[in-house]
Image (cartoon, rainbow, N blue to C red; front, side):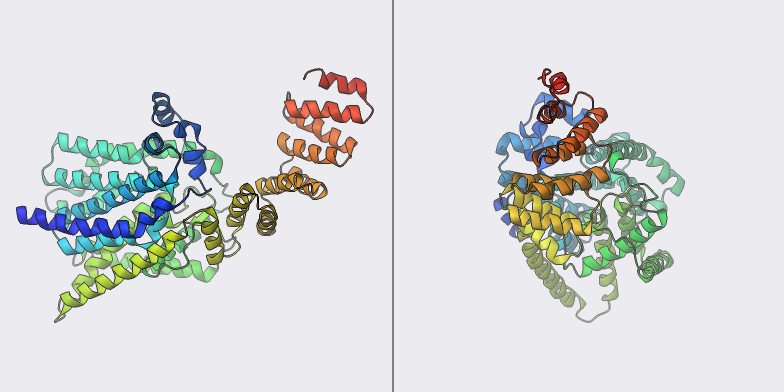
Length: 536
């Protein structure tokens, strides 16, 4: 027993060292302007540190369209100790990821008693390039924090499965609830536990399937509550079915599942944003569906002789379900961070499968050891390079634009960064490039118009403000901005009309009311102007 403990401890040390070797560089990285601002340094409830009022807010409100109170609290704790200096926040992400890596190794070994396979899988999880996004991005704290609770849930469940008791089940439920309060993507974990019941826990040998399913009902209730809160929080981001049809969603989901498999094997040209394709090629959709169906049928046929394939494949598909786009789709077709926990299932199937295939080889163990080391070294190097692109917002967005096509969102985010750093002409160019890809983006049109107005290019600004009014005719702000531009170039009657429209849409709009009075006065209508100006 002591020898086993020493060996596990000895293996854990290089796992920790490997993880920090790749990700320690993030301690010198900046925040990025993609969600880090919303979750941390511009979030007043978080940036003030750990407070009672902050605790209440975390549980009682949605944080940027998510309900993840423990994640919000973890950001508050960081701010309490590190302020809004990014190095400490990055350190905590790396630390939590490292804890998850070691826990994965220990839990896999606990379930399978396969020490070196568990170590290899944990090493893959530690440094796979697809996981860089989850670790190097402060806003993805929810990934690494929920991963810790995910691993703890698996460990607690394994103890429960081997010696069931109410107390042990309660521990499983409490840890699982903490995971859901870190990130709702864990909602399918009860189904993953059913696959683990099949293999490697082999509980079907001593319990019926019905009993094992019934046993998960309390956990499924927690999942249902978390799902309801998540759907409520993200209502405003739901895209209507007539914009992205169900057939498109199915096609995109199938394609994404295959893309993730390919990226697991060949993780190059990675990016923080992959934009939607308006039309997916028919051959791509059919090919993806045929491949997924073929794998699923093969796994089913091999379920008795190779049960780990069923568990690994089921883990992968089930854990992807909440983010694959069948239920709700946001702005992304797929994302690297979505693979953070689902991909463990593929590691499991591939690792155990390769060991089985090479079992009869004369020097199979030596070959596998060399191959495993080569894979880890290669992926660690590429992850180190990929992590370096997260140094700051500019390096991130320029890398994204270098590896993707027609990425309007990346152009807009880069433009925002350049504008903030007073590199105005570059920012204008990025906004214009992004709008040539997506001319319907009213926020980008507004930002570009504001920038042009600030630079004294008023005529151009007015042109963009007018486009915003066409895109959002019911927006008081759009009419007000357009009126300000018209006012500056002396088109007073038109400016007055749009100030009035802004007030019609939002009665009592103070700025619109005041500047309407000014425009009326300049237009030779002092009596009408007095009505508005005397309020201020």
